[in-house]
Length: 196
Image (cartoon, rainbow, N blue to C red):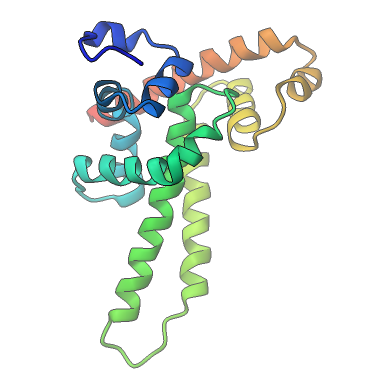
């Protein structure tokens, strides 16, 4: 278990495995740091691109925490270390809040005082299109085509690293180097957008 007296610098140095162990052992300091500090770019993106209006970040953090904590952290235990933990949490969080937003839209439509019956399947299909466009839009901001392909295949399509490395004619180690550079560039883009 991570010591509660760890400083911010030490928490920032934890590996993904150490963060998961700390979270699963209910280390409140590590949990708070992970969700409120490490995941800040994710929540900034969700507020801006999923909801499009001002949403309380603390409320979003709490909802995601409860979602991941459900059933003894079942979802978190599925993390396969194919990507960085923060990247995996970003994908899970964006999908979770997109579904939540779709349900809110559906609820508002069903409560509307109109005689017509709302076509919820059309709303759901439209929401799925927006979800794909959001992710694609983010990936398309990467100027390097190779970076876009690696992130898309590894993270979104969850392909095996060896399969992708074979297709690209590189080693798995080299593939991970490309992925790290792509994620660094993507994080820079998200941070830059959150400051504007």
